Length: 461
Image (cartoon, rainbow, N blue to C red; front, side):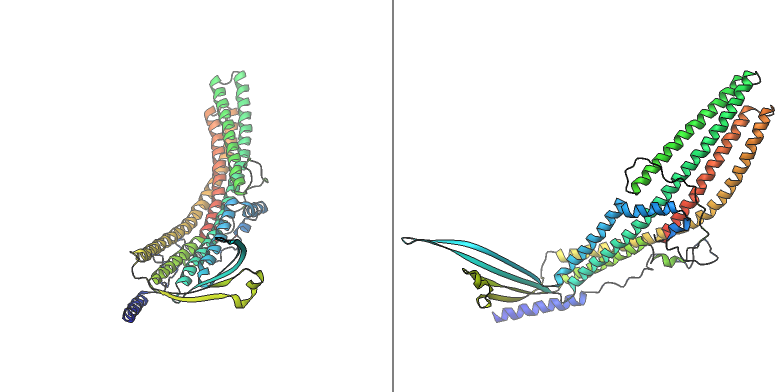
């Protein structure tokens, strides 16, 4: 028997030594590990460096926007769900680390016992029990610690997701609000165009009644007026649709209500985006992706340590007495303590499968992080390039509005004097409305693109 025990001990320690050599600490990761060379500056050359605004909503100087963003951050249900996920992740980290500490259990009960003896009747008595148990796996190799650390990294990733959700929510509120303002301003432009076209229709009707123009001119003028009225209905539908979308973000019932009347704010001053490397440590989605990579590294290390022996301590004891007062007498207590060592020898591939799975998930997390980083760089580069083109487009459309408004006045004068046909006059009104609508649209796009830039750079709210 002693020989068998000695052989078993030697086998166990041989396996332990082999596995210790194979156990690794989690790899040292670098946030610069993005699968591509990170340039020193963005493609859009900046003449100076500025820091990202800490509160980018304030940059627009609109108190209405600030109030809407604050209401959304306080009442949005998606954001509340993200906050609940953070709480759950923190609790999970606490659960995963609980195995590092002794587990103590206590139970107390009372039993009624009846004994029957042939020819002697029966007797009944009560028995009180107070039992306790203690179990503790000594984390010699740090397996449980690594498992807990993985949960902590996951909780940090969930926290970063929450900050990203806040930033995304603020951006969606601001963009929806600007779309609503644009639609309200466009409605005013279309209403003014309808008034002008009504004047033109009355002018043509008067000339038709005096026999100065054909009936076709009147029909064309009335058709053009009806088209403008239909366009106004379409704009009103856009207003209520945007309002409902904004109300959902604010956590309100989507009734398509009105908001404070305002105009589109001026675009904040020219800003720079810093250097690309800063993005890796600032954007919430990049932080979350990197933290999840770290979590899978620790899960892999913890799984490798499953091959090592586990040392456990267990203790159990308590008292049992028919007299309740004896339960508190330490002399009546009985207890025992066990120390055990368990070395996995054959698990049918379960441990190796778990190691392989965690390594594969770590590879997946690494590639997800690289892809997230490249997309983040693309979003910044695109927003920087788009701002330049949108500025030039806004300048051109502003000049177009000025020209069409002037040409419209000349067209009315020329038509009154019989110098142009009705189609030319109506075309001048359509051109004016189109130019005004396009200018409003590109002005709003400039603001939305600036929000996209703040979002891409990982600004704060």
